[in-house]
Amino acid sequence: MVVDVLDIERELIGLRCEAKYWQAQHARASERERAWKELAQTLEATVHEQAAQLKEKHEE
Picture 1: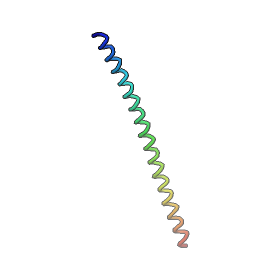
Picture 2: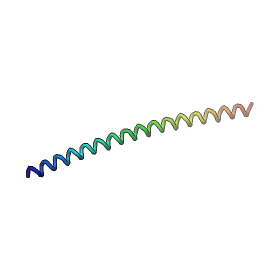
Picture 3: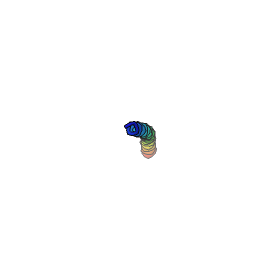
Picture 4: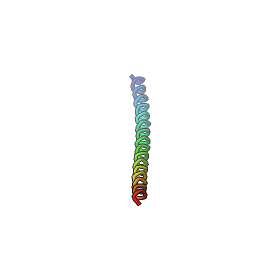
């Protein structure tokens, strides 16, 4: 009976460690996604600005 409790406690500790690991991985992935989305927005704004500048230059 004591061995069963110890095995269960060890398994619980292992599962908690795994959960923390995957939570950290998710946090890192979420941060990378946020950074990529921010970069995409910046690049889209740059493209729109340059397109507007070309249009103005073409109209002159």
